Image (tube, rainbow, N blue to C red):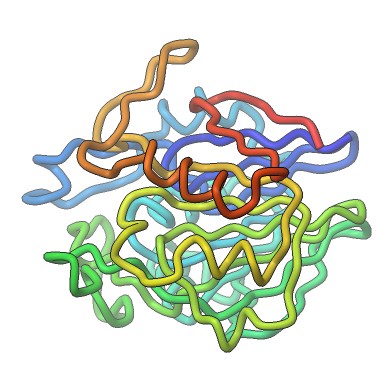
Length: 272
């Protein structure tokens, strides 16, 4: 059995009896004022509360390097012998954090072995159009001349991936931003498709083409939380405003009535 837990923002924790694999782990949940105006850094207490045994992590995979996807990665990696997979921008961030050479740098299309029973294919993707509905915030690469801690604007997007994790024979596709690159996605399929909700109306064909192409049996909606606010375990997830999740649910159900659709709360474990 594979247990998958949504940990907030685009973060997922995959657990089997043998290993723990993380995608886009982000537990610090920096407040909006600090995000806009201050230098930001991982919160060790928040990370330890969400991930009490970082040394057990076998691998970390990062879809892109905005702060809500990558801020906590060097802190976790420094306390584990885990593999780290991501972009050139992630390698720069890891180097700034004192961990040069730890990242398996991908350009897109690579399949990387994580453990004996897990591998990930780094499918080239695209970031959602967030800035006035037309642009990508903090575009470009993290600069090697930066120093930590740095402002959220320093956590530039880098290359964007939709990681396809093959774990114990099950295929999980992580779409951590509401966009995709159809040319690179062509020919891929998955059992479980994780879809970012905010911005879903700004990309024509999202999520319709993703579902048509990858043919999942289960679709999970995530990254819909207000991740600038703390989350209290066991409470209902605070949602971002103005994202029309009901409309997205109707669109998916109208397209594929037979698909299993899940909308988890933060911390909710799903068995596959």
